[in-house]
Amino acid sequence: MVYRPTVRYHDVFRDYVNKLFHATTLDRNQIIRAALFAAAHSNEFYKLIDGYKKSDVPLPSPIWEPLDHELWMEQCKEKGKGGRDVNAKPKREGPVESIDRTSRKETTNRRIRFKNSGGIKFSF
Image 1: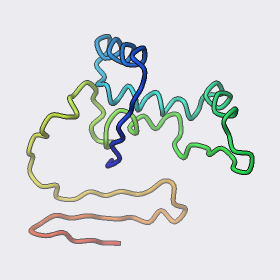
Image 2: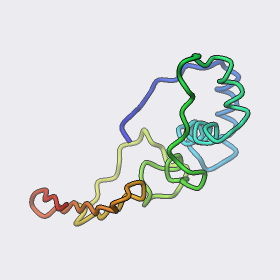
Image 3: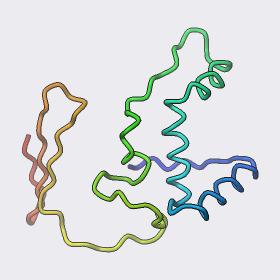
Image 4: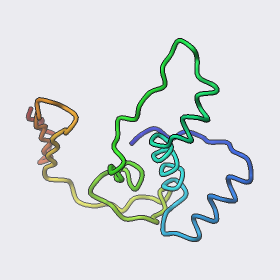
């Protein structure tokens, strides 16, 4: 994940996010991502947005499913734990030997393999 927007919002939202932060093991970024994640599947959100919709452009549908929690929990599927400080310096770990990803969105189920052993090798 690379997109890091600056979000400006009223103090009541800040207070709510801070209270959620203290009441859960989630960090503030996870809370904001969870809100956006859930909003895209919320009828109330679409009713609110519909009042501001341009007449010639349809509202988009989310490309994620309600069970794709890795999108808001962490930056990658493998982590799955909440509450870490995303602004802290990451712990340096050894190189990843290989990562296999098969996209479920693609109909071809093309396998992409990245391998790090003294250089980057791509297999498609």
